[in-house]
Length: 312
Ligand SMILES: Cc1ncc(C[n+]2csc(CCOP(=O)(O)OP(=O)(O)O)c2C)c(N)n1
Ligand code: SF4
Image 1 (tube, protein in one colour):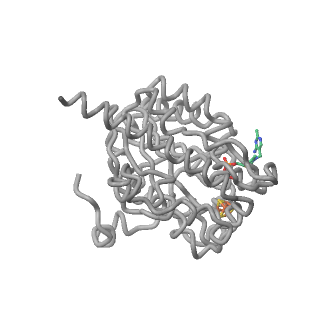
Image 2 (tube, helix red, strand yellow):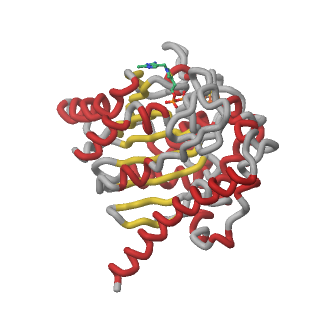
C-alpha cells in the first residue's frame, strides 16, 4: 500500500473533513483528540463507535452538541468488546454490515478492566476494530496507574513510582492469532492513518494501540504532546509495527530500530524535565527501564528471526 502524504489528505474532501469536531472538551494538547481525529479520517462516516468509561466518553459531550459526527455509544467499562460484537451482528442483520464497528477505549478500559471482553472477542474473531488509545493511566478519574503505565510512573495510586513494568497488550492480542494487530503514535499521524486505512479493509478482529500523551497526566506542557509521542518511538520505547496474519513488519522510524545503536537514549524520554510523571527516576530505575525496552524488542526480534527462517 502506497504511503499517504499530507497533500493526499488535503486534496480529498472525505479526508479533509473533520469527524471529531473541534470545540470539544479535551484538554489542550490531548493525544486522544489527535488519535480520534486521524483514525476517523481513515475510517470515514460509515463507522459506529463503542466507548467504555474514559476521558473519550466524557469529552465527547452531550447530544445535540456532541463532538463525534458519527454514531457513538457509551458503554459500561468491561463490556465494550462484547457490545461492539453484538452491534456488528445487529448491523449485519439489518443489512448494514459495511459499517466499521470500533471500540474506542483507554488503556485502563483495555489492559485491565476490558481485557476479558477483548480476549473473548479476539478468540471469536469478531469483525470489529478494537482501539486502545494509550495514555498509560486512568486519566479521567484523576490519574491512577493502569497496567499500561511504565515502571517509575508517579500517579495518585503510585506516589513513589510504579514498580511493575508496562503490560505488553499488543503481543497478548497477537497471541490470539487475529488478522491484524498494530501500534501507532499520535506523533506519526500518517503512519496511524495508513494503519487504520488498512485495518478498515481487513475482515475479522483487528487491534490497534495508539500512544496518546496526556499533558495533565504526564505532567508536560500541551505544546510538547507531539514531541513526547515521537520521542517514545525514536528511543525504541514504543515500537511501531503491524502484525498481519502473523507476519510482523516494523513501520516508519521503527524500521531500523531493532538495531539498538540507532535509537535515541531512553533518558531523554524518562526525565523529570521532559515529563513530570517521571520525577523520581534515578540511574538504577533507568537501567531497569532499559531492560524493559530491550525485552520489548526481544519479542519483536524473535518474531522477525522466526519469519526469516520460515522464508528459507
Ligand atoms: C465500573 C466502573 N468503575 C469505575 C468507573 C470510573 N471511571 C470512569 S472513567 C475512569 C478512568 C478510565 O481510564 P482509561 O480507560 O485509562 O481512560 P482515560 O480516562 O485515561 O481516557 C474510571 C476509573 C466507572 N465509570 N465504572
Ligand atoms: S485528561 Fe488527558 S486524556 Fe483526558 S482529555 Fe485531558 S489530556 Fe486528554
